[in-house]
Image 1 (tube, rainbow, N blue to C red):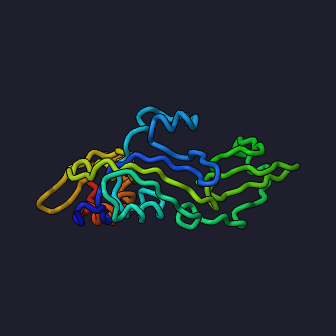
Image 2: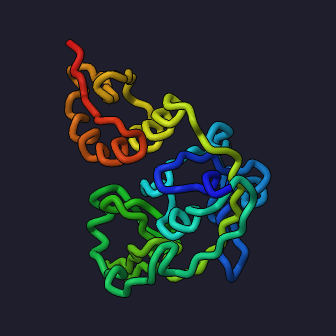
Length: 220
């Protein structure tokens, strides 16, 4: 049925496993058995079906786009490097002074991966007082395959709100819904009011997918 096809802003629940095409290596999954195969050290609670809103940046862009038009069921979706994590950018491979790392009490070694300036960084080499660091996404330049099982479409408003809040805000704010004014209201304690701009940033996603405005209420 045409009206059963998944559209932008629909909420769906999925199980998935992402693999690098050339090596079949698993790089991401929310399925317990596949996590064990890949020797992922993941908490049990993270290995559960994922609820997302189509077209709201909750998946890699190419996969998000290719889920539109699908129905409940199982799919194997291949993404080229542009659709997945982009091409490798040579300008993101940089030579840095070793002292930058030492000042942060980081002692880099070849092959180490760490977060630097908010980016996942791989240490390519350490020579004398210099470190060659690669700021490209580790999956940049690779074609990938996603094995996806679409379990159901989500219809309950509360479940949709919980999914967005969990993804964007990590469920840090209690919320209420004002049906009359079509608003979702997040309640912050006074000491949390610095988080209000975060809600503003994601307001478009809430409005598009839920038809609700976002308001941050500061509790005294």
